[in-house]
Amino acid sequence: MLKAYFLAAPKVLKQLVFGVDTIIGLWVYMVLGIAFWMPPSLICLALAIFFAYLPDLDLIPFFLLKKRLRLVSHWAVGHYPLWVTAISTLAVYLVASRVVPGSVLFLCTLCVTCIVSHFFHDSVQPHGIAWLGPWPSTRFVFRGGRLVAADPEKWRERLAFLSQGATMRNSLEETLMRLESGQVSLVRIKWWIVPVLVISIYWICRFAIG
Ligand SMILES: [Zn+2]
Image 1 (spheres, protein in one colour):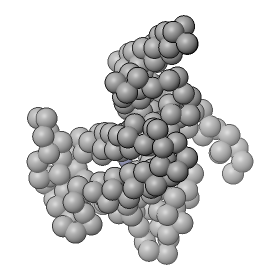
Image 2: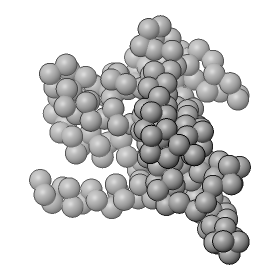
Image 3: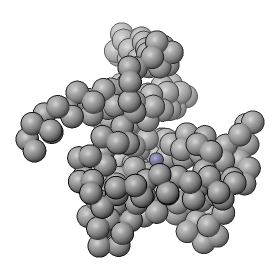
């Protein structure tokens, strides 16, 4: 088992560095950091990336409850944009207004933008997500620049696919199954390099200005 975790480490690391959600966090931090003229902050950058991954934290209750409740998808636990965005932003507001009152607006905007971007990215898949869920459970797919109702059959197909051997898979196997496979493409690297470069230049300029 330890060997399996060791072998999985590079895949997880690759996801954390070059994953789409990391890229979302970088772009949102770059745009909002400059727009709000924020001082360089590794903590804010890390928060942006954390917010971009936050909806997928429903993997934790999924792993804990999947056998008991016979769940096959973590999206059945908490991929509900309306509620996740509202509750997360309220939590950020309550904490930030006590800890860093001068950055409340920036941090709340960062939180909303990263989380909503994550859900838009998830909505690209043919089965879409239940933006207003859990009730109503209508799923929406992001197509042609707008959200349109998804074909319910696509979600049934997805659940049928995930159901195959679901009870046999442990948490590590479930994680690996969800990680993107194959090499990180050159296109992906470009989307990663641009915000990293811009953020670096912005930080250097801000340090130089003092
Ligand atoms: Zn997601």
